[in-house]
Image 1 (cartoon, rainbow, N blue to C red):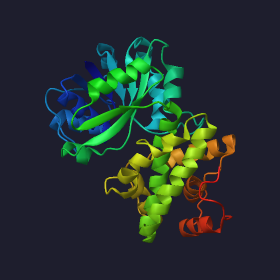
Image 2 (cartoon, rainbow, N blue to C red):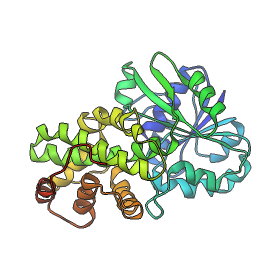
Image 3 (cartoon, helix red, strand yellow):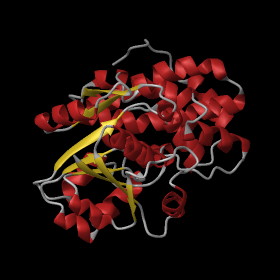
Image 4 (tube, rainbow, N blue to C red):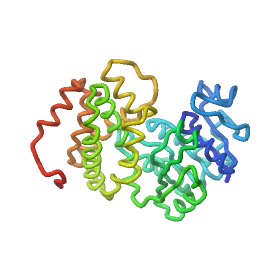
Length: 320
């Protein structure tokens, strides 16, 4: 399979490295002005991983026109702008796989919805989600992930082609639930960072249980299957997001409470804003995500905001 990976951040580079290991013909593409791309072109490595000479590195996104499959791994707020670029209008008929997690802040739309709006109807669109860190995968530590799509044949085909002993891929059956869950787990990850900064580590168990429960209610209200919140794309990604030293979202939350700068992408920041809008639109209470939103966007005191969750009315654990 000829594959172009657009996005040379840590995850895009890892996916290019992984697909090359599976024997695919891979091009890794980044923006011409990107320092990360320049480093990869000069040294064939970044701070996480080294890529072999068999991977072509390019700054020309039209390289995607030479591929039959395009994997996109960019910041969620950059997706619409990328897909509106001139080269995308010439990508008819290609498989497009979104290997990223997030929601558009202005609209609350899922990333596959944006792709469907911007691309040609002949494009076959899928999402590749689930837990994994570059540091673990490059060390040979296996992971389980999910590929989902409205196209039943496409997701089965991709799962078969991309699965290996390093990454076991399951096919999803709930695009709404998997995308919402994958995006929302980053917000819960920021909340975990809040707890770590406050040394309230034992609350993480409750954070996991209650976080999954509130997201399950949102998924159901949006037309998805609430059980998806307990699958690989949300609850199954909690260890990598709430506990791992590699988690950007957890580290961002911790740095935020301590008043420290954090220079890496934490998708949970923009997702908290999008979820706040979806909470109002669908009439679903999201106490944990709302607390993160209040802290990040309304300058609420983190400790007081978390403590306020204990003052909510008492109710059965699994109230509907």
